[in-house]
Image (cartoon, rainbow, N blue to C red; front, side, top):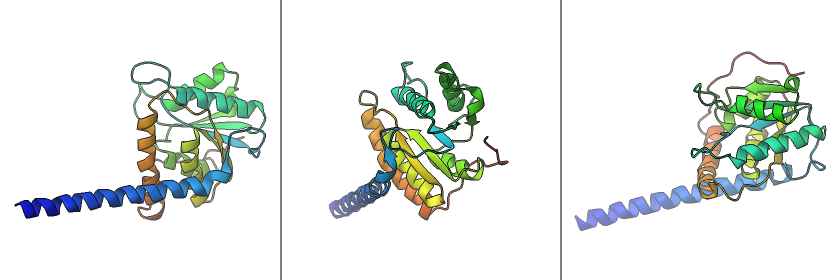
Amino acid sequence: MIFLLKNLFKILFYSALAIILTCSVCHMAIAKSTKAQLHDSVKTIPKTKVGIVLGTSRLLRNGTKNLYFAYRIQAAKKLFDSKKVSYLILSGDNRVNEYNEPKDMHDALLKVGIPDSCMVLDYAGLRTFDSMVRCKEIFGQDSVIIISQEFHNARAVYIANKIGLTAFGYNATKVTTQQTTKIKIREFFSRTKCILDLYVLNTKPKHMGKKIKIG
C-alpha cells in the first residue's frame, strides 16, 4: 500500500511539474514574440482604421468600479482623440441579459465623447480568441489596434499574428490594486489554452455569422 501511494505521489508530482513547465514556456513564448508590437505611448503606435476594445466587467462582484474596465475606456478615448483610429469595435460577452460588456463599453465611451457612429458592438466576443478571429473574418479588418492591459494585449496580438491579422497593442494603464494575483494566475493558464487553440485543438469561435462592414 505504501509503495502504491509513493508511486501515485510521484505521478502526481511529475504531472504537475510538467504542466507548470509547459505553461511557463507558453507564457514566455507569447510575451517574447509580441513585445515589439505593444505600445504604452500613442505617439509610437501605428495608425489603423479600427481599434478593438476587449471586454471585461464594468463592476466587480462587490459592486465597486472595475479599474481594468475604466482604464480600457480611458485608453480607447485617448487613442481615438489622437486620431490613431477612426472606429472602435467593442467586443465582449453578452450571454445573459444582465451582463453585457459591449453595451457597457458603448455607454461609457458615449459619456466621454466618442460618437455612436464610430462604435461597432460585437456581442459574440465570448473569449479573446473569438474577438480576434471575428475582427478579421466578420468585421473584415486586416490590421487593428488592440486596447486592453499589457498582459492581455500580448495574448491577443499573438492570436492575431497566427491568423494573419496585423495587430498592435495599446496598453491601458496597469492595475495594481484589484485582483492582481487572480488575474496573473488566470493569464498564466490562458496562454497555454491559447497555444492549444491555435496549434492543437483547431478551435473555432462559438458564433460567426454574416460579415459586417465598418465605415
